[in-house]
Length: 197
Image (cartoon, rainbow, N blue to C red; front, top):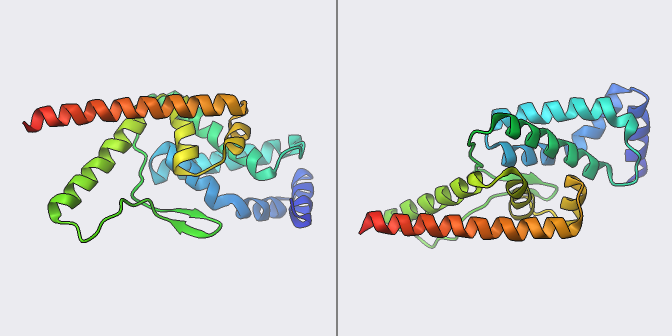
């Protein structure tokens, strides 16, 4: 944690809104992208990010500075999104078509293609939709770890801190989530082949 960040946190704890806005601006893009991957659309991601920022401002006085501010903040963003998903309990899509911002710039998730034919492009798009659909069928605890690890690229340690659980639990959920995802994809593939015959 930099000295500037420590000063911004201290000022924010005493109610300085300008310092809080400056502090939040450092992590705003990453927070939004986490919300976007969990919620699946821009409007909900914006709403959840704003709700998380309000919650962070209200509770920043309770931030003990034992972990990085970013980890504490991403935990709140993730929890706000998961709370909302539990309330809704209806399917939402995770869009992997658009890129997401990191400290090093925008990253796009793409399937490698060398001058593909229209048929190949159609199958690639269809495969991406199948993967997104399968991720959305996972329950919240598996969906959140798959999004944080495989889409956002967080380490096991960061995910454990964000979700307030042990590294062993994170690894177990990722393993279980990936196996469930593999089973869902396998059954969809078999169903697709049955209809194409």
